[in-house]
Image 1 (tube, rainbow, N blue to C red):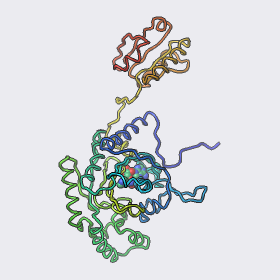
Image 2: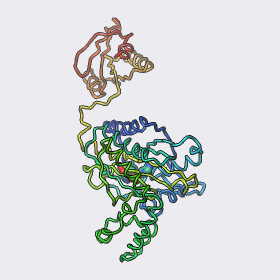
Image 3: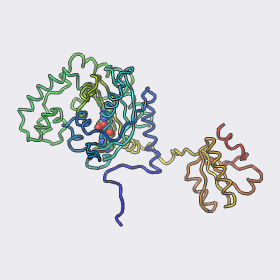
Length: 419
Ligand code: HAM
């Protein structure tokens, strides 16, 4: 029989590493919650048209990397390559934009891009994202960046940096585009590149080929075309970042992989991750909602790559074996098979009372059972034999200090609740 394997290039997490994945994801989510964002749980697949219109046909994501399939009703569906377009679709469809603005939501889950797999780049990966929709304030741009930065700092991450730029408003982009298109028209380019440039000339700044890089080295930069409003807005965002002591550099050459960005745009980078160094990114998107058939509201958000943040934390040595993230309060061991039913019943009762506990299963000798207690990471353990059942007393062992104290079996739950 053929051996079954996970599909090529997907990321997956299992114990013990999954506890760190969970810790990273929860820390990112917590930072969003702390800033007033509420959960949005969205479908993993959407109408293919949503991503074509939302993310843009000039992008690699749409032109090369989508997992698109036909369902049984002949509809074209696509596994979500990113979260922002889906959030917009849901906001429009459910009239959330008629409520008080801004709408502030977070989401977390799996995303899919058919990229060439390598370290830190997967075909199924995980993001935690936020979107703040409905207002175009530099204070909100700052808030979104600060939510990501706070989460990274909370994790203890040190090897990361922030790059920002502004892609300006419609006026800024129109005047830049005119000059950029005229600059590009003087270059000798192959048909495929010309086609990409026609859809979005900014894409050429992101071309990795040395000859294109060279040709683009003196191309006009959008940052030099910002309208007075965009300039002022961008300056205010920088002021706010400075006063919060969030360090950043301005990267006028930043090109994001998705077409909807306008205004403040940013990326968080970890230099310890090799080629796949982007641990998160985002920015403002002025025309996206109108493009998808909704009101003309602006928004800003980010997507943080949980897989890559975990890799960055590991590269920084944040998660070592001394961090025991077990949720267990207590691990119980039956001295012989005679006490197993008693212990099983006790464990069940303690769990009913909210105490996190587990027990040694199977018929292992005491030594083996003690090893299980160690491995479980529980804070306390206790062995229950005939004597303990008769006396109603048990020696509760602190797994860290090795010290024991005698506790009444009937008051075990209280013991932990008061701890
Ligand atoms: P993005 O930059 O395409 O933005 O993705 C955000 C993050 O997801 C990246 O910085 C990276 O950490 C992670 N990521 C992307 N692709 C992969 C992959 N193949 N394997 C592992 N990690 C990956 C967005 O998706 C936007 N929706 C963010 C956003 C929200 N902008 C505004 N609102």
